Structures are given as structure tokens and as C-alpha cells.
Image (cartoon, rainbow, N blue to C red; front, side):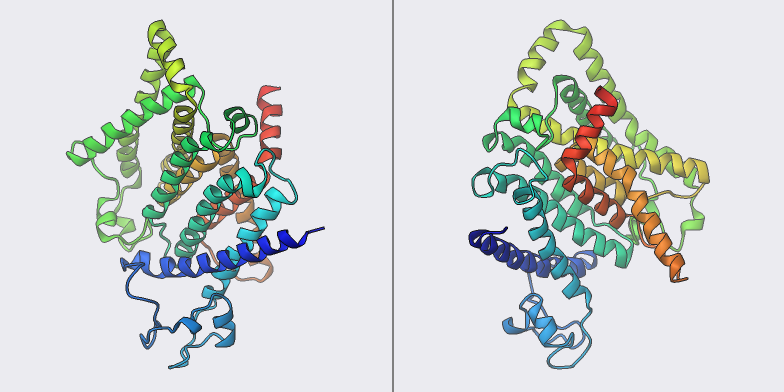
Length: 385
């Protein structure tokens, strides 16, 4: 039974979620159009009339106005209401799942320590709602959204040790935390990434789909000039970009294993809780990117057509920085099942309508987060039993 104080918390979180959803609607409309998300204030898309505060109340205003502008009576997309409601439900749903139904162990009481994990993960989910909505509309995932979530995940993992005991973080998999071996590979991969970016900046290696990037059509490669690309050749450019990252991780690991003095120092350094969290989030980012990027490259080589998009790569990299390497891999492999559900629905209604893959990936991440304890128990049984 939900007690009165908890009911007030639920009402508060629902209201906050609806307000966040209202802001996400601004992001969804303005960000892909290179408009400021701060200025000017909200206005009717049709008549450009500024929206008064009493017409900008999340959920209620859309219902009271019957989905129309007060002045020009132009239709206001139901998407605004749906995003606000969805965000509010996720805010409440994750609170109930973690702190009422106890689906996530080790989080602690919400008002003491549990709020930290909740906030970090709710930031990611809110960002993924915006990214998925933009992907649905324009077939593009803004990389700035992914980079924001990646930063939140890596920094959040590093600072989590000031909220939770370090042993609880690792035992309950609350945040990514790297062992010494994983940390050295993450460090090497990061050095490789910096190297690749410098080589790209100097023009020594080339950007794949350069004309498409210049046109800024989308991140999925579905532009009017797609037939002009030799897709396998474009993938070779991406392989060249990735080689320093792969070699960096490999060489760093070899140094760690072969140089005893360095190994002893690295174990002491990398297992400082803050450093372990930092490298854990970074490694989760690399693994999240790798599982999608690998599929993109091999799929393109196999079928001669661009498979998946770089937006999907960065989306799962961001997810890995928040939830860790193992859960993000599971999320990637269960995402196709949601795609199949959509396909069956389309077949049932005899209306085939393809949608981008970003929303399915986001749903996969959502499910793995809720069922984290069950997923991690299953992985430990399968791989470490």
C-alpha cells in the first residue's frame, strides 16, 4: 500500500516529469533546426503568437485548448501531449520500480542516497525520449544529446563513490566501475580516440560520407545522393578511424601485462574509487559504441548498403556510459525483438511503416535498466558460473 507521503512524492515527480517533457518538446522542435532552446519563448508554430503562461501548463493546456492554438485555432500536434505524459510516467515509473517495488537492489532510500542513481538515469531517459522523437520525425539523432548523456554518465560514475559505498556500487552494479585490466584498456582506447580525432583534424584520415555530413541531411545515410556512395569504401574509412582506438587498447593491455612495475602502480592508481568509476563509464561508452559500430561495419560490408547510423552508435555509447558495458550489450541484442513486435503490428493492420532504429534501442535500454538485477544475475550465471 502506498502511504500518503509517498503519494505526495509521486504527484511531485509526475509534475516535474511533465514539466521536463514540456522542455523536451522545445528540444525536439528546435535542436535539429539549429534554433536556440532558450530564446525566444514558446510560440504557436503557425501564427507565431507567443504562448501565455496559462496556455503553457504541461498536459492541462493542451487538453483545455483541445489541441488548438487559442488565437489562430491551428492544430497543435498531439506529440506535445504524448511527450509530456510519457516523461511524467517514466519519472513516476522508475521511482516506483526502484523504491516501492524494489526491482533495483542497493539504491537505498530515495531521500537519502537513492535519488542520485535516479537522477543520473532519468537524465539519460529524458534525453533518449527527445532523441527518439527527433529520430522518428527526421531520421536523425543529434549527437549533442548523446554527448551530454555520455558526460553525465562518466562524471556520474566517478562521483557516485561520494554517495554510495564503493563495494555497493560494484556488488549491485549501480554504476560502471572498472577493474585494473578494464581501466588500462579504456585508457588506451581513449588515447587512440584522441589520436584518431587529431588525424581526422589534420586531414590524414578522411571522414566517411563527407558530402552527407556537409549537407547535414541526417545521421542515417538516407539522403538523396545515397546511390552515389560506394558504401564499402566509406566503411573502410571508418575502420581506419577505429584502428588507433583498437590498437591503443591492445598496446596498453600488453604493457600492463608485461611490465610488472607499471602493473603494480596502475592497480593502485586505477582502483582508487573515483578513478575506477571514471574509467568504468568510459569503458561502457566504448563498448556501447563498439557493439553498434561493429554491426554497422559488418552489415555494410555484407549487404553493400549502409547498415544502421552513426547516431545509433553514439546513442548506445551514451547508454553504456550510464548503465555499463554488460547491460548495454544486452540492451542492443534485445532491441530487435521490439522491432519485430512493431513489424507484427504493421502486418496485422496491413500497413507497413518503417521507423528508425533509435527508438527500439532506447526501449531496450529502458527494459534492461528496470530488469538490471535479473539481467546481471543471468549474465553471471551464463558466463561466470
